[in-house]
Structure formats: structure tokens, C-alpha cells
Image (cartoon, rainbow, N blue to C red; front, side, top):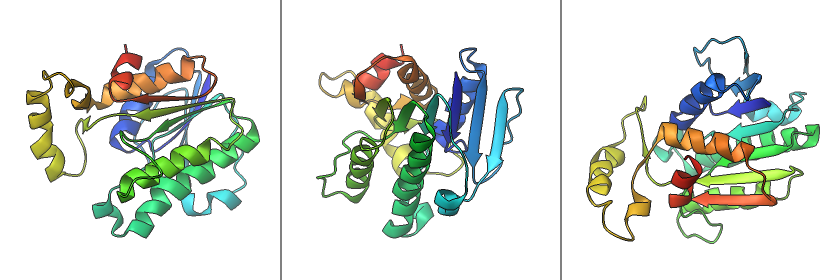
Length: 215
């Protein structure tokens, strides 16, 4: 298979890129990125792109599967509007190009609790994106909604530093275990497995479902 990946410099994107390059099922991994990943591999094709202008870029994004892990935080973005531009606009615009070019599958990294009806900005944004991609012409769409992410980030996040150990400590309690933190490599494995699954049109894997998919 041939894959396109956006978001390769983030926590999950890095783990996913490494997993794709190590997976013999994938013969080509095309990375669209705002800055160089630093990765090297015979089957890696890396392109520096301006996602703000991607709709008019003329890029032909035809592949077997598009993996979308692009995203940021409110702290990094600065405003809700800028975060929306990165987390929603850039992803839907790239997915639209891929869909129009004939890419068959989309595997999208979302978030647990994502719903367009949420009063929480982040959950509503993710939920609206989940709904928006369903209107595109992919043959198969897989939405990955993991719990709190665990892994080595470039940026320090106080909330994750504080709550990750707490969630691990209480993960043995029935009903809470599905909310336990999930490692970046586990999410990456789940996303690759999702690309190999045969589902009807649209599938959502959330919380424990992501752990199960990674097995």
C-alpha cells in the first residue's frame, strides 16, 4: 500500500511515521509537513507544504490511505480561531484533495468524547470534523478516538504531567479502565490496523476500542 501522512511531527504522527516505515505492507510513505521530520528511509517521500494554501496548491494526493494526525493546542495556537484553522480547516482541506484524487481510505485521529453537540470547544471541533469527513468520497473512513495520550512530547503539558499518573493509578477500577492513558505507539498501531480493516463506509474506535484495535 501507499500512504499519505499529515501531522508527522506531532506525538502520534511521529510514532505513526516510524510504524509505517517499519511496516512491509506499505511500499511508499508520503509525508506532507510544515517542517522537516528529520526522518530518512528509502520509501519516505517528504514534502514541505503550506497548509494554509493547500486547496490551491495543485497537489495531487492520490494514494491508498490518508492518515491525518494534524493538530495543536490552545496554548500553542493562541486563539480558538487559530486552533480551528489547524485542527479543522487544514485537515478537511487536505482530506478533500485526497478524496477528489481517488484516495480510497481515510484514518483520522480524533479525540474521546468528540461530538458536534458538545459545549466544550475542543470536543465540538473534533466532532464537527468527524462529521465533515463523512461527506467526502472515501470508500472507507476510520475515526480513532483515544483517551489521554502518553508519550514523549517536545512541549511540556502540565495537565498530562499531573493527570497521567492519576489515571494509571485508578485504571484498575471497573468503568474507569477504558479511560486509562494510551501510549503513542499503541495509537499508531491502531491506526495502521484500521487501514487494513474492511469496514462498511465509516467506523469509530473509541477508548477501549482503540486498545482492542491495536492488538
